[in-house]
Amino acid sequence: MERIQPEEGLVRVTGSEARHMIRVLRMGPGDRLVLMDGLGARYQAVIRTVGRDQADLLLERTLPAPAPSPLEITICPSLLKSRPMDLLIQKSSELGVAAVQPYTSSRSVVHLEGKRLESRLRHWREIARNAAKQADRAVPARVDRPEPFESLLAAWRDRQASRVILWESEEASDLKKFLRGEGRAGAVAAVVGPEGGFHPDEVSAAGEAGFSPVSLGRRILRAETAVLAVATLLQYEWGDLSLESQ
Image 1 (tube, rainbow, N blue to C red):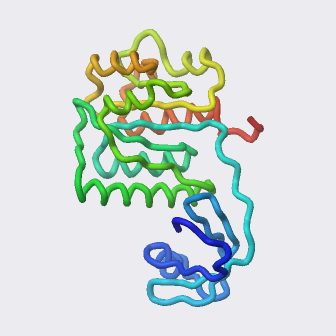
Image 2: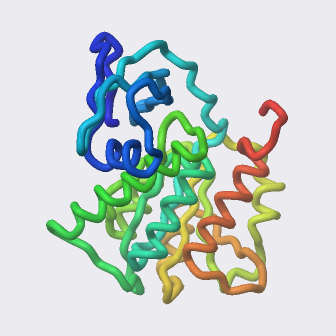
Image 3: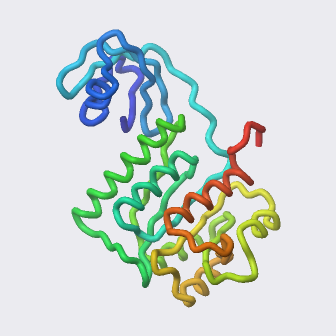
């Protein structure tokens, strides 16, 4: 749900959430569950009544939210085709990424606009919400509207964050060296290229905006694989892929 008002007492769940609850999980009156919204609120609730595509729930008590990652990760991928983009957003939200900021560049294969873009945004945000529930995150990854590569660089130019751009042609620095040499950061932005890679001029422009070109080694990874690799490594080194307190 987008937002739960605790003073309501009774909350009606409709649409895909209700259908999943009733038809897939086979839940009915008297069953208890955890109800979450997109802002981090969590409640224990009990189902009062169910219909064909809706369920009425009684909020019983507020539940504490799990702690957020100590690292604010923004993943910036080029727009990809439907299935890889869905996977990228799903796994990013599971891994505790704070935001996914898609972009388009000179070698981007996919371009979206108008109603098609609005439909994909709704779809992606639903994927992020569902993934956050599975991973027990209080708040899902935010999925932003795609923007031109130049606008992305301009937006990050003066922000207080560590910045990297993954480039397969980089020979002097890799992500491991960057992480070990940078010192722990509170926020990081990682730009991942399109299927066709970056034009060298784009990497140069990124460097001028404060992004450090880094390699992930000798393998050439698919764009969605590179996103999962960098998100995992960032959380391992600076985030919460550990039982130790940060």
